[in-house]
Length: 420
Image (cartoon, rainbow, N blue to C red; front, side):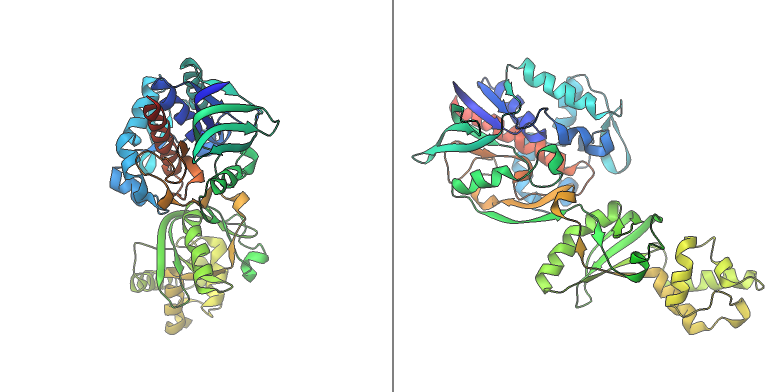
C-alpha cells in the first residue's frame, strides 16, 4: 500500500499533522503503537485538557524557555488563537482560566480527544492501532516507506515523526523516534527531565515533618554555587516525602538540572520567599509589631496568623529562637535572622525525579537540522518532525501542547503541499 504521508504517533502533534495533511488532499496513514489515540492529551490539564494558552505571541514564547523562539514561524502559521478557532469550529466551546489557560467548558479531556479523532476520521485518514514502527526506510537521501515491527511495510513519499519524548511512558512516549532520527543522520541533544518535582535529602524532608504542606503564592528561586539567582517563579508549591513539588517547583526543575550539570556539583540551593510582596525590613517590623501587641503570647503562637503553622518551628530553630520566648525577651539580631529566613528559606536539592516521572522531555532532535517553517529535516528529504521529539520544551499551562499542535500543523501542511 502506498500513501502520500505516513504520520507516526497518535498524540497531539500526530493528530494535528494528520488533520493538516489530509485537509490539503494528501492520502494519509496514521500509525499508533498503542491501542488508543490521544492518550497523553487525555490526561493533560489534570484530565480537563488545557488545549492552549491565550497569551500574546511574545509572552507565549517566553513561557517556552526551551528554544521557544524556534516556534515563531510555526506559530505564525497556526498559533494559539488558530488553535482556539479550530476547536470552536469543531463545536467545542472553550473557556479561559487563570494565566490564560484554555479549557473545554465540559472540563473533560475526552471532549477534545474524541472530537479531534472524529475530525481525523472524517477527513479520510486511515488509522492503524497496535502498529509499532520498527524503522523508517531511507533510500538515496529520501524517505520511501515505513516498516512495522511485525514486518508489514508501507510505501510513502513523506513520513512525519510525532512519537513524543520519554516522559509519561505509560502513554506510549518511550523515545522510539530518536533512533529513526539518528538513522537519518540527525543528532539528539542530551535528554533531561523538565516540569518534574525536585528531590532533597534535607533532614526536614527525610523526616517527613513537612510532607503534604502546601504553600500558596510564594516565590521559589534557583541559585548557582556563586550565589547568582538563575530563575524565580511565583505561585504554589508542595512539600513531599522526597522533596518539593507543585507548579513553581516544576517550572524551576530544568534550571536545577542544568546548574547541576554546568557546575558539576552534588546539590543546588533553591529558596522560598514566603512574603514575595514585602521586604525583609517590612517582615521584621510587622512580626515584631504582632509580638508587641500580644506581649504575653509565645512567639510561636504570635506567628501563627502570619506564617504556615507547620513551618514555624523550623524557622524559629534556624533563627536560633526558642518557641517559648515572649516579646520582652526577643533578641533583635535573631529576629532579623528570622525575617531574612522568611524572605529566603533555603533548601538544598540534589536533582529531580526521573525523566519518566517528568511531564515534559527536555532535549531532542537538534533544531539546527530542522527547517523552522516546514518542520522538514534538512538532512533527509521527505522526513518531518513535530511535537515533543524536537528539542523544545515549555512550562505547564498549555505551552507544550501549543507547541505540539503548531509544529504538527506545520509538518502536515507542508508535507502535503510539497507533494502537490
